[in-house]
Image (cartoon, rainbow, N blue to C red; front, top):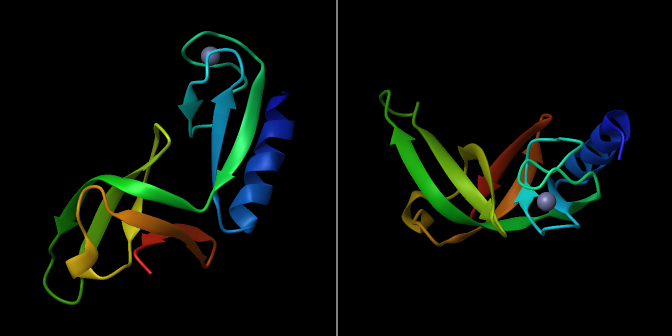
Length: 113
Ligand SMILES: [Zn+2]
C-alpha cells in the first residue's frame, strides 16, 4: 500500500469515529503508526482495520488542581497500543476495562460509556 493511500484510509477511519490499526498480512503483527512496511517482518502486504473499542492497558492521572484533571490511557487493540485522553467516569477507570473510542472536535478520546 502506498503511503498516501494508507493515510487516506486512516483519515476515513478517524472520521467514522474509530481508531485505524494496520495489520501485516504476512506475520499478523498490528501497529497504529502508519507505515508502508511491517516494522516486524518488512512485508508491504498490509491491511487497515477500524476499531471502535479496546481494553485499557495502562493509565496515569495528572492532577493540576480541579477541574484541570487529565487522565491519559494506553489502550490495547488486539496487540496494537494507542495513547489518548480518557473522558469517562473515574470509578470505571482500571486496567483491563473496555473503553469506547469517541471523536470530538477532531480529536480522539476514550470513554467507558
Ligand atoms: Zn509482518
